[in-house]
Length: 308
Length: 308
Image 1 (cartoon, one colour):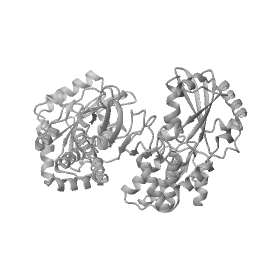
Image 2: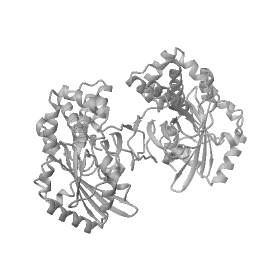
Image 3: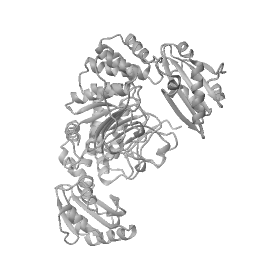
Image 4: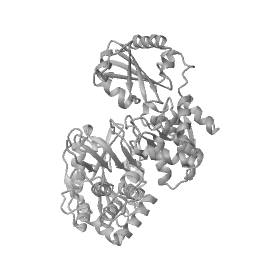
């Protein structure tokens, strides 16, 4: 039996999943558990790579599956469908997460810490404090980066007072200007030049279904909506292809300006009236501008879902 | 909508379920949430009544079901099958528990604190400390009583270092001799005179199944095994009745001496050889004496299950 304990976030890892697994491993080591090792369930995105490069450290190793009985810790997820292959037969020792609980079960008692915060790293920050473990620069930067990413520099409506407090204190420990660093980091994640239009509309696409009607809301972050719209014609072609291939009633492509906290949407399909109703806007050239909207989960999905 | 938040433990409540729900309500109030109210999902047992009488307080009110959207906190359980009627459509704000997670899900993020300790109240004790809330005599007695109950005064193999530490510190706050109080409390729960033999064999009976073979392990706590064995003939009649009515292969009735930490078992059915193999004992007059055995979950069930 492998004596290592693996800690990892969800598939298609974002900055919170990578950084929180590394911070959890550091916390475990500080608590005397030297066999805890961070892993990742997929490629590191550009935003996360910026963080790793800034710190001059390597990403955790890729984990493709786990054997029966492998001891693991989960961060930033709990649903087995979002976790590693073989998770059903692993021994889950603990979970640190900020999502709802679903599609999750264990055979034995475990450590489970969930809080309805904007970011897993904020819960980890509180764990360091509760356990009286000092926070050093490296883990401060990891946790701070995760919070910047998940809350879009505290601008997302998912942000809580605890996230704000954690970010403030972590920035002091890290001794950085969190706004400058945060914008650079977010910008690094918004370089969309390397992606084809087919990749763009699938990069972060969430499929939903209501009363048998399938729809997709995809989202990209940018610092220039205008730049992305230069590719509008090709993006729409890629959207139509998705609609036809997957029998969708609606495809919404949300281009979110993370600096100014606004979102431009492109909506295509049979049911674009749902978008017009949901936001009280008339689509012009298939588009609508949504002021102050940044969160798919809290601001986009509910308005579409209820009119579908 | 009801603006109260209900906090409750599992059905057939034990001392941990009742006392931890009351302690969690007190902690919530100390944190400024004055709308949290403890409830119970069934009758108070004799052991728990002893605690309430000692403190001169009333039991929480009975809760039969909850309406859709009712806000609740769960303690000492998470599985919906062990919870209140209507739980599927309640809004679960938080859970404090020391069991495995199973048959549980939510629509939204929540607070969830689980630790693999011997008792829920030990987790609550740590919550008071982490939140910097003072522990006063009443909540100290509630949490202390729960720990004594779940760990049989720290003698159960489910006991952890954290349970020991919590009990020691709570006894100081409560300013009592925890051994004297604990034994009196446990004794109060062992008065079996009011129960018929049919009731005795069903009082705390857990049904299991392996490869289609059904078996039951029932357990009663006592301070005198001899006293219980005076009713052996009638108890065996009641056990045979259960075997016939429920098509069981095996019925094990475990009489646990909580003062000396031993268990006398009576085993009846077609598969009593499983018990002989499991414990390396020959049954005499359907009985075997198991030295040092007190935990059904950790010491009895595994030995039977693996030979079934």
